[in-house]
Image (cartoon, rainbow, N blue to C red; front, side, top):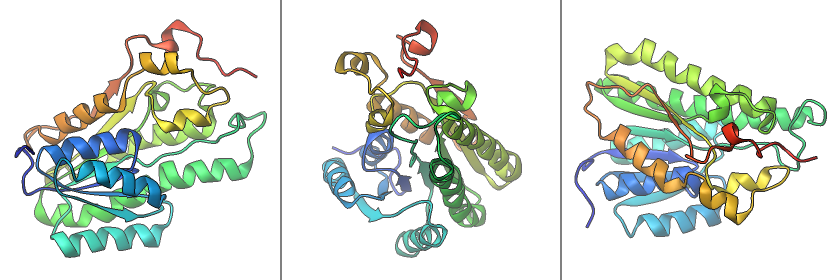
Length: 256
C-alpha cells in the first residue's frame, strides 16, 4: 500500500519516464505524493505512468523542457488543476551521442542541444515553479546534476561538464535568494548510473559493467530522503557514486 509521508503533496518530475527521474517518481508516489511526470517521448511516458499507477496517484504530460513556452504552460496547468507544485525534480537531461562530444569532433549544434536541455530547460522549470512556492512560503527543488558537474571528465565532454556544473550554481542561487521564503534546493550529483543515457557513450558499457554501477532505484531512495527531510533543513548537495568507481579505478576512458 502507498505510504503517507508525502500525502497531499504534488510533485512534478521532468524526464520522469525512465532512469533516475522514473525512480524518483516511483519513490515519491509510493510515499503518497501525487506525481506528474513529463518527458519528450509519449511511449516512455506511458510505460513510466503504468509503473507509477501501481504505486499511487500519477499522471503524465508530454513536454520538451527546452521549449520555454511549453514549460510555462505545463507548470501553469499543473497548478491550475492541483493548486500547487510542492516538489520539482528536474531530471531531464541529455548528452551528445555518436562519440562526437569533445572539442576535437563536436558540432555547435551538439553544444546547443545539450545547453538547451540540461541548462536552459532546467532553469525554465525552476523559474516556472518558484512564484507559487514563494507565495506559499514552501517548496523543494531537486536538480539532477552529475559527478561531471563537480569533476569534469573527457568522457562526458565540455557541453555536459559545463551544463551540469551550472546546475549546481542554479541550486546554490535558489538557496541564497529563496531560503527566506521557505524554499529549498538540492543538487544531486550521480556518478555512473545504469540508465539509458549510457547508450550515447562512444562505447556503451557492457552488462557486467552496468551491474556494478549505481542503479536508478538508489537515486529514488536519495530523492525520497531529501523530500522527507523537515522543511527547516536543506540538503544542499549530494554526491552519490558506485563503490566500484571507475572514475577512480580507470577503465572508463572513451575508446576511439
